[in-house]
Image (tube, rainbow, N blue to C red; front, top):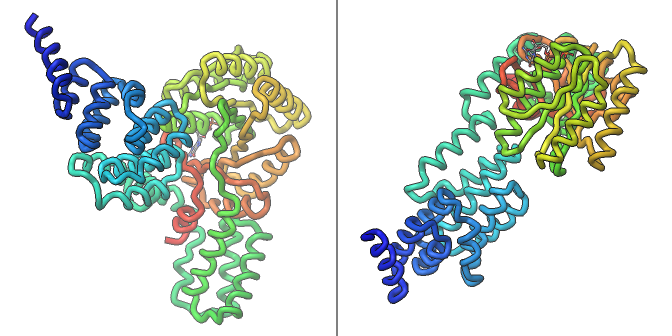
Length: 462
Ligand SMILES: Nc1nc2c(ncn2[C@@H]2O[C@H](COP(=O)(O)OP(=O)(O)OP(=O)(O)O)[C@@H](O)[C@H]2O)c(=O)[nH]1
Ligand SMILES: [Mg+2]
């Protein structure tokens, strides 16, 4: 009874004297009332924005508050609209709203808008840009948001390799053997002469960069030496670094998953790491807020289906499977139906890669692709070919064979840890001209990294 009176009196009090923003906030919290929350913002002229946003998220009041915000509160309204779109995973629309909100005169609104833009960039895997944004807004962080911002910054520094712990460390460890095979350090502090070029050429070939690509690189280095009048081997190594980075960045690319839904078909010969890669990728996409479904279209052996099930469980995503020996295309058909019924974002298809029967494989892949594009026009968005770095030059011939079978849109190079043949990345880029999208540096779920040429080349040299 008393509670009822109290509640009523707070509302009545506000009716008589509405200019009490803190009380509107209290009312909004008590009664989960979006209109009250909008009033808290209006009467505080936006100064309660941090508290209001927290409450809106907690009590699921974003949409309701948005409705009650007047057009005159343009930036605050844009901030709420952005959050609403972000919640529904419409990231590019969300970003547009946040850009508007970031024009606000209110520093807190500006901060929150930019913070959300950074989070979207992170979700899209654009870690460098996200970090830039965070560094931009750091000087103006409100006291209460310091911890949250620090956490995001730390995470982004790890992902971009700016903080040499966690990810970057294991990435560098992963490249250890290749780095040792290249052993660029023996070329330091020398004069540039014929002997140096010959030794360098040998090194490049030994690290599986490929004869053709190695010769080309050395040829270019000779030219640059003349042109730029290079004197020392250290200068020469810097030029080599530049060349490698620019070569690789032509063939690095992000995963295409903008379509709703998107399908990723994963191909590759036996044992290269298809199933493992799918498990790792599913987890990463899920962490980016996507709903993911796996299709066990490797029906060649029962163990393959079970293995994918284990990965689905680890990643926390659904799986559609057929029985051993079932037609892979029919499993894919079932999976696509299930994906559409649940409105999920991404389907990843595991396949059996038996290259020794090329005609059969070609027919099978064709059939799978046909099922996918008939059910979801324009898909698959990605046909990823998985290659094992240990196989060195053999990986190139595998890729050529698959290229004849179907259009490969990207490469995942696995098992870079534990191989001295990491130079194969460079051969793949220069000879196949297919973008490298991910590299595998271990067996664990977190051991798959988007391919970053800058980071890769630095990892080879330092
Ligand atoms: N060290 C290391 N091992 C890996 C990596 N990726 C996969 N593996 C291992 O490679 C082995 C084969 O991986 P799978 O994922 O089963 O390969 P697959 O291509 O699905 O094999 P099939 O289904 O038999 O064609 C497993 O033992 C994995 O743990 C990696 O990046 N590094
Ligand atoms: Mg498999």
